[in-house]
Image (cartoon, rainbow, N blue to C red):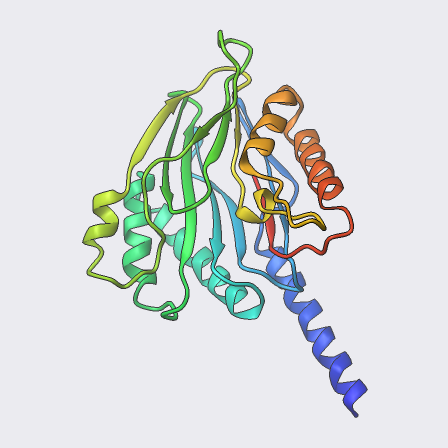
Length: 253
């Protein structure tokens, strides 16, 4: 009876994982002058990482990456709730900053007191050739200019912003510190967004892969296609971790 119950629970978790993966974009996406590739690998059967591509008309694309504090089933449920919320808000708010302020106002009323969400939301406009982005306490993102630039060093971009879901006031502090920046785009520019499961992947000695190592890897292989770059990063992270178990969800765009 115990064996049968264990198998039933494992089967339900496999189904939950399949459903959660179906909430994420599948494969690579592209529109004029823009190619997008994502990857999400939960540390357990289900996890709290989330990324999405949101078409906003013929010339604009919303891109987000988020990480719910914690792992497992509760984080996965909050992730699903976040997806529905962002899909609705993206149709109302053109500004990443405005979207994050609205999301925080709603989420802070419904999150468990011990939970919070980090998130970066960006809008690419291929006609205006701009990327506008706001960051709610999430990891920095990496920007490597294309061949048009005189210097192609990797830049770690870190606009100000605090995490989503802290019910410390009516949201005034969240809006006060949240910064929105706009970056002009050139041919061949690369942007790498990721969760801390990538940068904090550990080896058996307890050393972390690190933001700097990830940025150097992006710079070194910036001219690869997005899918090839994703695979190269994953190979390097797994080679670095070696025999160490994956301790956190790993997601990147």
